[in-house]
Image (cartoon, rainbow, N blue to C red; front, side, top):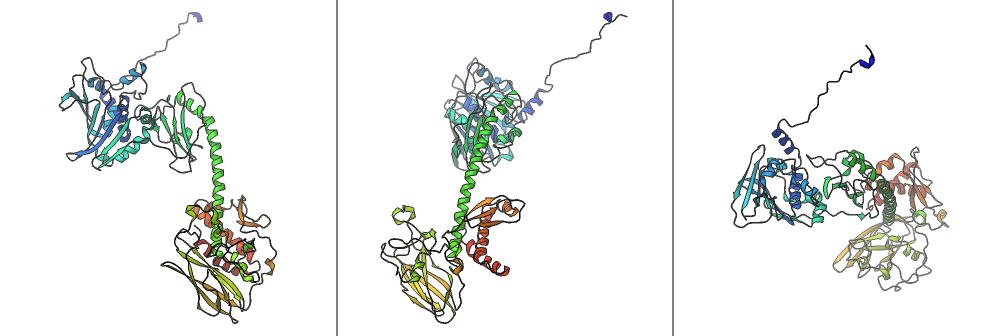
Length: 614
């Protein structure tokens, strides 16, 4: 048989249309698809906003032993039928066919609803729903529905005065919603409907009668610095609105995804495409509003990954690069600021330790070396500037300038908050010292208020030798000179400082010896002061820190496993760096000591330093 005459067999093709076999089962599935009761409450409030309401009141109360929730508004109410009555029947019989979609097609603006299923979400809140609205005849009508029931009823409701708007009441609430307080509702709506409330200027109040509290829903205010020059790429679907703030890093910083002013997702990182930096960096908070997105109808908390979503992803690519650059700059600035803060705190702790340790043993980097002599007065003068001067031929008088810089100040430039308060504490500097027999040494008392500011006014001093031998010269001033006895001993020096009724006491220990450490090797050094520090990443090397004498900095290996571990907590990192400073100090001051003696010195210095590490 010729091929041309062969008959081709047609495939047996069957086609048809999808349809719902059990309508009530479909309605039940839709009604139970909303898992978040707070989202359901937000749906009711949005219905009021769509109806043009300017004042919405949410009441949480209790009657007949059960909780209820009531939402009242002054909007246009339920659309009316031809007789001028609220068209409750259409609301109940046109599920998934929202009349708001028709309003949008006619050009209505500012309407969010489109699915016609928002009212059914009351199933996740309570057992029964009643919806009350007035008709054109000034009478009130009520529609009632029940959870797990396909029936509804419409009836007249007697009221004293007709009202504008709608009353929605859910009673009783489900047993698991006893913790649905007015404060939780207020917080949720402030974020969920942030832009809708701002745009419509509607007033939303929450009255919690069981807790006897009232709240006003104020649209959430973001913190940080608003990034103004951010523009995503243009899309054919529409414009993307951005309101992004740069803040200090924290887990509370999140970018919410919105559509037409209503929050879709609390954090954009819930979408796997955006689970990356800069969105996960923790520096950003604010909103990304894409009005063209397609939402999942059931929960209204999901995004359909269609061409509209793809357009959003492509538009955010240049924005992500711009945000990443801003975050990197912020991180660099934070590291520099953190390094300065750590350095100041470590140096201050060391200086406080030096006030308590022998100066002749811990003259690190010549911080006690000579300083330019002031023209008039000094820090410890109790009288006017210039009232007290040093004797040029007294070698011990030079020590009056041996106090760390943290106590120096310029009284002519002080602000109000810099003025010292009442006396709170006193400290003898040095607290522990070694003096050779028959030698003299100057001691000072440093008085502070509760905020550690130096106190100078209205002070009365009394120096005493509590135990041991020796003599004091000028024991009624802020400083005194101790004359060591001819024989070695241990002497306890005490100072009593009075300011009005306040009395502070402090003691210092003096070791009088006939031999003293040779410090001639320290003479002639440049006055460098306490060093700074810097980082050098060397993860494969075992050294933790090194002192660069030429640059006067401590180089810290930030690639060492100890630094990585310490860096996970700010306080731990601060202590670690402080101990590195102590290590370098001990190595610099005692280069010839044996290992066990160096360890003893390390413990001594760490004890006095970490006490003031705040």
